[in-house]
Image 1 (cartoon, one colour):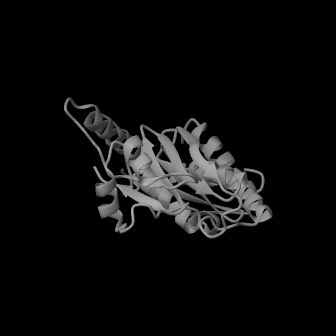
Image 2 (cartoon, rainbow, N blue to C red):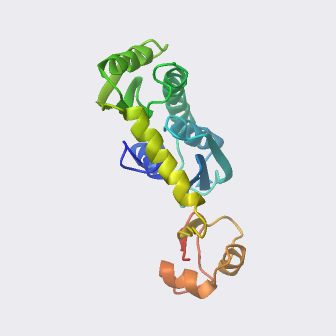
Image 3 (tube, one colour):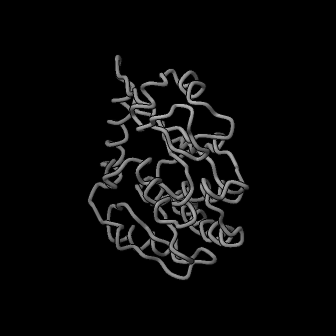
Length: 235
């Protein structure tokens, strides 16, 4: 979606891949109408909080659902263990970006601009578009004023005349598309295997078939699936 060139889901996935702590966790992302849903297995509860914090700085995210994220602390072969202190440090850093995003979203001049607020250590990264030079400087000023921010990288914050209107038009177009009569979007789903799962139960719960799932994932023995394994569910 303009001006990012990527959907909300893609931008969340991109930030997860940038984080060594999250990139190793078998978690998938779905998004609908601003609700980001995570599904999979993680090594501890702190990772769940980090997922929430990571998604919260993405423009357009209204809420984060981690109800389908399970915790398997004793499965190092399928869910890589992480240092909880390191995760907490990442959560604390993300809280800075969340505070910046809150202040920008509640600023009368900036609230309708499409701006992502991302985290890089104690530096925040602003990405998106604003209408003019004044709003650019204001965004940097607002970000810089937040406690804990040691620097602001605004290299990916562009000045585009009519940025607010362009973004609003892009959002309206997307809403109209998914609301149109007869519109059906059924992409392939992804499922992360949990303890006790069988392929037949997974197929039944997701209205698929064992044969289709096995074929899509190159599974030769349908009785052999592993905890943490990502399965593509064809539609």
